[in-house]
Length: 328
Image 1: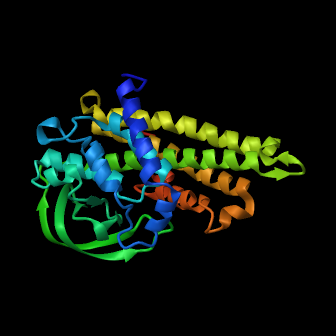
Image 2 (image 1 turned 135 degrees about the vertical axis):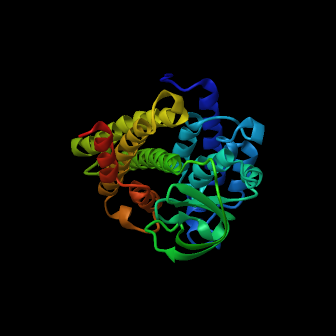
Image 3 (image 1 turned 180 degrees about the horizontal axis):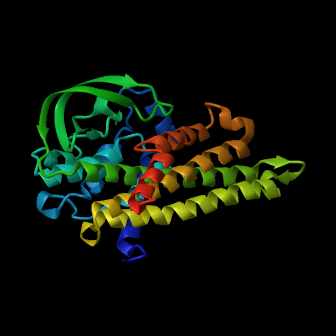
């Protein structure tokens, strides 16, 4: 097992980071709350042109032929930027499932001409109103539909527009796609985004307490504030390697069985969910009253962090899964 990322993986991450900084600044995330489709104009096509949407598709099908280890830090950057588009659902779950099934929908998904989302284990679908294809878990099967009926759901994070899929009108079974693997990819991708959100909250809070003065001194110079932020840093630095390890487990099925893969993914999601929850609470504490205001950008990441912490299983459910895998 390789414990470091390659220069190529670092370069890919840095390039996507620059793209997000350019096309998805906080004002673009905020605008997605109120626009018609909840998306950032121009971002999806740029991700398609860069190949981000096709990372997990084989080269023979027109993809980049990469794996979850290559994608995991891209999703971390998506969390850091607060990307409202259903990038994780599309690139980390739908694309590999369509590839495994040899679906004719794959080609359009790789370029971004088609936007995919997912509804797994009865959960809500992100961005279903603006999607062209939805993958729904039904028993042990994954179904792909181009037409469906749904009901919108309220989300604390209005840039993650949720809907319950009620009925699939035009569907096909994705024979060859693994529903259990799709769920593990969803939990892994969510964990990676949690780490990114936690890092963003920590960076924003460190900057704020360095600028904000009380009694003639920066707030960040007080020991209690330092302890709060040090605890967040520890939580993030412990969670991130588990997320990377889980990505390796998903990417290398030949090395272990599905139970072990699920154990690694669930440990990563539990730790990442706890880390982002702590980051949210301490960021709000250190910012004081301004952290509660709608006008201040902190609320964008607070709401995203709490929404992701619960998505695709909260920390308690994933710890139960780890315990089951260990026979405890």
